Length: 217
Image (cartoon, rainbow, N blue to C red; front, side, top):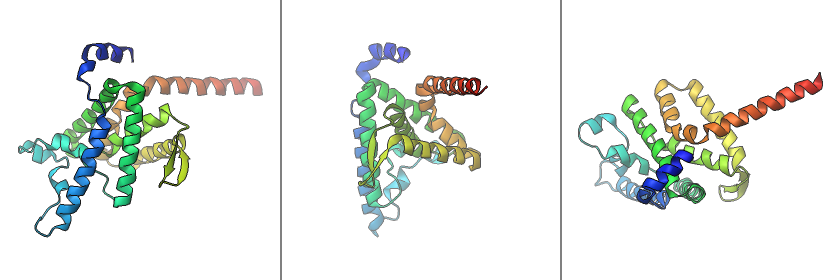
């Protein structure tokens, strides 16, 4: 954070405020336009087919795909899309308020670059794990914050984060190397921002276990 503070003093004026609001608005717009083009028989392909990350297409001149995949909404029902976009906006806005626009921009940029790099290596990239990194960062900073799952079930963020962490480990174990690289590179921002907290937490658990073993003896 000291390094980021120095960067912010020098380059903070270039930060994009309300970044997550812009991204969520773009996702919502893509969802509406894609629903229209998919339902219209005059359109052979939906809008999503022109926006997702495709390394071969990028190398053939469709360079917009390097960034437009960031605005793809979840591939699900309208109800879940509305819930997911609201959650993205809530989490992103809270992180920006906590860190400031510049640090939040850097966090998102690191995850975005990691995702793009993995996509250039494997040919495949998705914004799913990048958005998950926002959720995990929020859970670390606000573990006791409650959200209404499906708008009526109160659940603390730390419990959902534990569940997501378990699912990520399972994915890393059983997925192919393409998916593994996508997950690891997309979460590089989480590692860069929170590795010290994780290290200190592991030291704390280790010392607590040593203290318990000594007391048992």
